[in-house]
Length: 221
Image 1 (cartoon, rainbow, N blue to C red):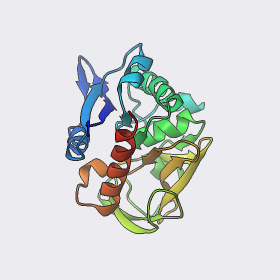
Image 2 (tube, helix red, strand yellow):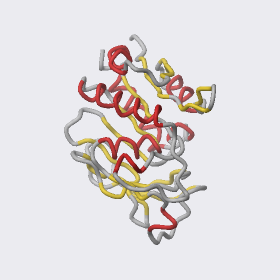
Image 3 (cartoon, rainbow, N blue to C red):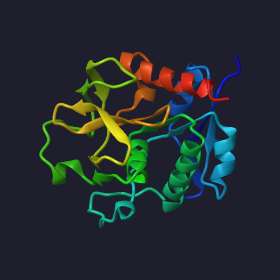
Image 4 (cartoon, rainbow, N blue to C red):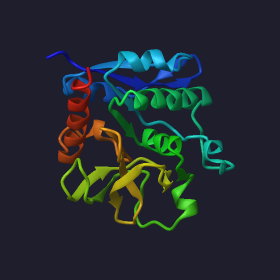
């Protein structure tokens, strides 16, 4: 069977493109072909050529996208990156191709569908968990992709979903009630999570998530 081509968007740092290798490694382990996609004026051309899209982690999405002024703790990624990712996401969704959002990618997808974010968890809401490092438990509720239960995940974020975007349904929650995962109710396979499954090759939930996305991408040819 032909391996699916998985597009992974990249960050921009000065003269360099930037992306942690774990994303490409996870795609390769799952028998896919990772293709790095720097910002371009032609997102539709990218969308036509890939079988699935990963929007990976990064720093923060500019709160201007959801009509808020940035708090001091916010460090926005390049607007060139986020503008491109939103345009690319719309193209891929219109073609009904699989999408996986991870951490910043989840936050961007939520905002692209009309949702909002907590800009800085610790300064805006009372929480019991340190979401910026380490591991914590999440609860998976009724959904059409994963079995219900409690799972341990890694955590490296200071922002979180506040209001869900249109058509999105939350299926994973931390013990302090932050949304840790959602999917689009009408799209065949648009799933986003707050943790980093690409760094957890032995974690049951994360392996299931990557395999789900890759199988959907393999079928989208």
